[in-house]
Length: 77
Image 1: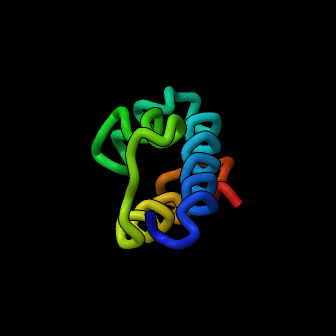
Image 2: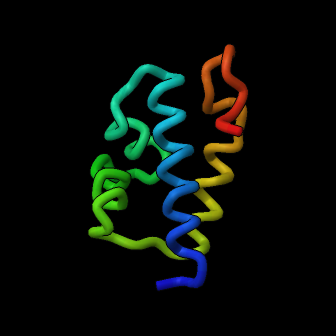
Image 3: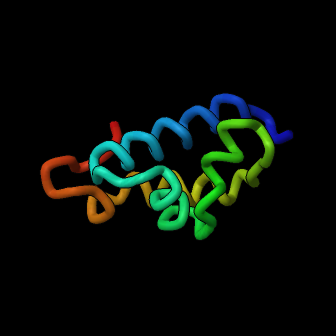
């Protein structure tokens, strides 16, 4: 486990859930868009998988990009 993984996991899941709500789409679709694997966030929520710090940074950068959000919602923050 990487240091800080529990906090990073919650940040990823929070961003993914916010995106799913904002775009009115299933979490599986957000998972496919952000990670390339439709089951990633479901497995992550059940602690059945892990991620690298590099992948965390990539996904958080993807979530921080206003172009990935609906026009009425600029980011998850």
